[in-house]
Length: 72
Image (cartoon, rainbow, N blue to C red; front, side, top):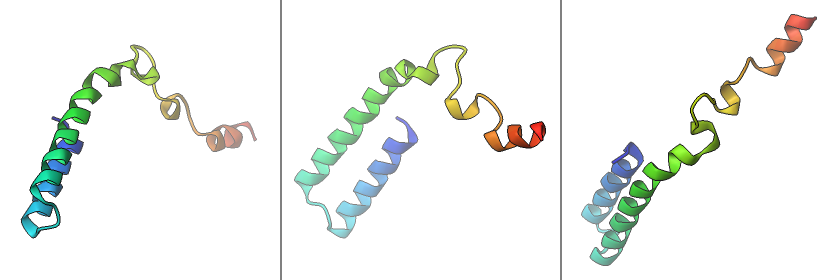
């Protein structure tokens, strides 16, 4: 389970403890957390930047400002 799923479960437990969530809502939210966490594993490698040899667009080079300063 990833940290997002664990955080969600901790917050849900706190909600049940203080009485904000009833049993039905808690169960539904826990199932949603487990399903979305399980789905994330197979889908992340399919993202464009997750392919071998590629990087996210934000990490492909220096910021535009740095390029403009070096040309001046």
